[in-house]
Length: 194
Image 1 (cartoon, rainbow, N blue to C red):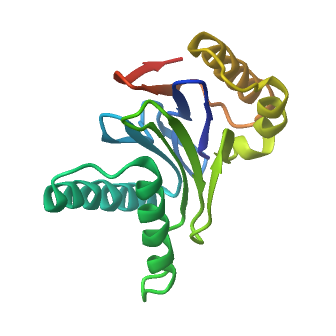
Image 2 (cartoon, rainbow, N blue to C red):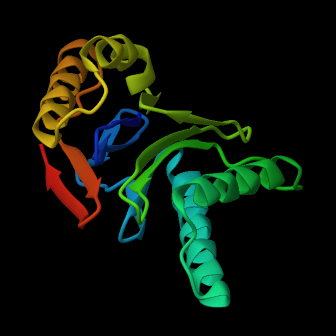
């Protein structure tokens, strides 16, 4: 029942996720943060089954930190995207099978360049300017295409995200009342709930 969506602006990236956890016909929780902070300038929003989402997210985060400690420097966003893609691809070929979760990786590099990447459980990777995963994919792609323009300001980006949330709450059968939004800029990550 996950919805993850985001967009890239002129100097920032916004990723939003619903905070709900459901099992069968029960809503368990509305405050689950499905957007991982990989470092001060990278976030990874994951949609999928709870166990796979948590285990794969932790695997990515811990390996990202391990590489930083081994090399003494942070990977840039493109390197991180290819690293995560290779982890998905390795999982397909393992005995355990693929991780049943998809993601949006976003952030801002040290030179101030924002990037957003779309990844799926089969190891597909695409650099995008706006996108969605999970159930948001069915409802929001047209709205994001219609509202998006290059070099958005942060305020315009937040307004588009609010429109997306309103659309999901209006059209989607399953109630998603709370959304967690994270914005990455060169200064760092800010988070808030809508």
